[in-house]
Amino acid sequence: GQQLNQSPQSMFIQEGEDVSMNCTSSSIFNTWLWYKQEPGEGPVLLIALYKAGELTSNGRLTAQFGITRKDSFLNISASIPSDVGIYFCAGRDQGAQKLVFGQGTRLTINP
Amino acid sequence: DGGITQSPKYLFRKEGQNVTLSCEQNLNHDAMYWYRQDPGQGLRLIYYSQIVNDFQKGDIAEGYSVSREKKESFPLTVTSAQKNPTAFYLCASSIRWTDYGYTFGSGTRLTVV
Image (cartoon, rainbow over all chains, first blue to last red; front, side, top):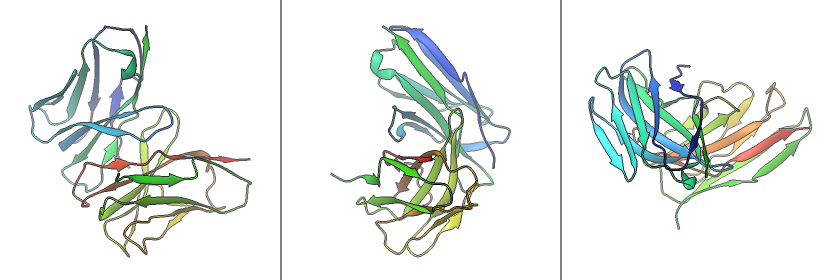
């Protein structure tokens, strides 16, 4: 099945730093989603994007639907310890019905 | 409170045995899904059900089976035919098949010993 290319695979940052991660696809997507998974739990939806160029915020999190419709970005500002976890992008291309997930970005924060 | 309950949280299985993972939701969602998660990989779709009494194979269905006899329940059986069953299994649901606001359970970690 199709997979998304998510980067970086892992990040080690200091508390208070900003974080950026992205996701790319080989095909055009019409929906992009960002999820967060904490250890031993299921993913939780953070932000959903439905239009090219759309920029949406959820607190300190901001995500964008790329203009080319083949990528999406997630930024976290002023990171705090509870931001630790694995962040997944997910999306659906025009020809498919199923949601496809990226490999995840593991975020570790040093206090 | 509404949600998805997966049980058990941890499961150990001997090689050659079948095992069934439970997934129950009280959200009145039509669609339900089973994903497998391995370290360093994204979530891979095993089976999905758009509506009760219907289910479809996902990307990695070999060695797995499901049933959807009740709207609330979508159990997954990992059979002895699954070559590498040790993984973290996640169940999810959504209001409709076309709705991407999936609600996930807390997962079941299956280990073959």
